[in-house]
Length: 296
Image (cartoon, rainbow, N blue to C red; front, side, top):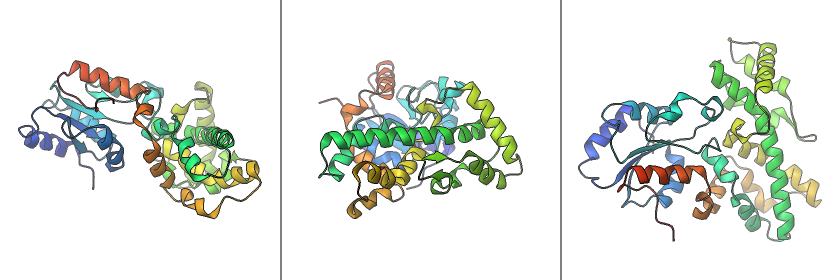
């Protein structure tokens, strides 16, 4: 299922508004949101539309036909808007978490990963599994924050750097668990005529001076998960003295850890997030329209 563009969402609303009377018209960023949100948003409450990214939701909410109408909402990952305090965050009916930059980060800020590992490493004592999960999360966050400065710079300066093309197994030393920033800069600059690797490192250093490194808002959740998958075997062997069991290698496949997290994530975890509070506040303002299921 492909997401639709902002003008297609506007047309979707025009065509559907008669048949969805009483339902909220909710725009989501893409199809990966489908499995999680359809569990939390009953069909008797919501008419869900999957966009082609955050920008299309923002553009749709700015169109006069959708502006100021009760029952319309867009749920997005705020990403670096949280750091820059972007004007887009003030758009009416735009809903987001003001602590975590994206849905993957929200999942990782919950006990869901510990639940995944309890079911994966069932021959290890629970306390050890939880300690290992904390170590893996902390190391992955640290490395994702380091790489996050390059992403943030690209977001600020629009250098067109191919950040998504970076392979973490090429830029992270698996023995020391350090990110080779010079190699990252070299790889990114090679694919761009806009900046040299030296300039890129200097600009990253300037950004680092402006922002404390210990914030999840620097990270992209998919980076954290990709780094986790890469360093998981090394940390497992270091802590438990054995190689990662072969029957758990599926967790290392692209996107698999994210899928397991979504399956392990519980509604009670979501109720602790600022996104949950944001949606409930929207429901209060847009009564009788609802988005979320009633807690049981």
